[in-house]
Amino acid sequence: MILAALAIAAYPRLHRRLLRYQSHRAAEAATAQIAPQLRDGDLIFHTSLSAQSRAIQLATHSAWSHCGIVYKDGASWQVFEAVQPVKRTPLADWVARGQGGHFVTKRLRDAATVLTPAALARLKAAGRPMLGHNYDLYFGWSDDRIYCSELIWKVYERGLGRRLGQLQHLRDFDLSHPAVQAKLRERYDDSLPLNETVISPVSIFNSPELVTVLTR
Image (tube, rainbow, N blue to C red; front, side, top):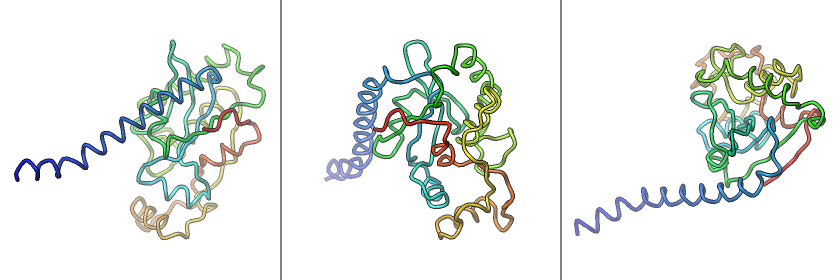
């Protein structure tokens, strides 16, 4: 009886571990398959499984709630991303964290001529000072804390002088849904910074400066 009870209690945990293992194996297979099509500086988007993802989707009217920059490190691919903290994440780990393992990669329309080795070095140098910074739960525009789409926008603007996506203010988003309002109250109480400059994942995703490379 005791063994049976322990087995039942442990099953949900084991099941979650199995699912994580399976999703990671699937992500490894997917990233190995697409690796030849990737280029340094590509952007990658997915639907995050984080607690705030649903609120971001509702406020921006988009499935895309997280994004990063793809770089090659030796023989492996990594994603430079703003989570907690800003860091480089192996591509397969990043893909496995997304909903259903689905993702889309984008690239500068003129990447073939613009993203020279020297330009890529400037791009990486622009992001280096933000490495290790805390994630910005409040979506402020200072460099003290950084969120995912802010990282991309600032790296490309500072490294290459390219502005990907339209800057907006918090007031420009759809803040009407109860899930969005609950998240705003959790973060700001009654002091909403409605005039704060913000860049959303979908604004970068829809930038005319970019073309879609891969959809998985």
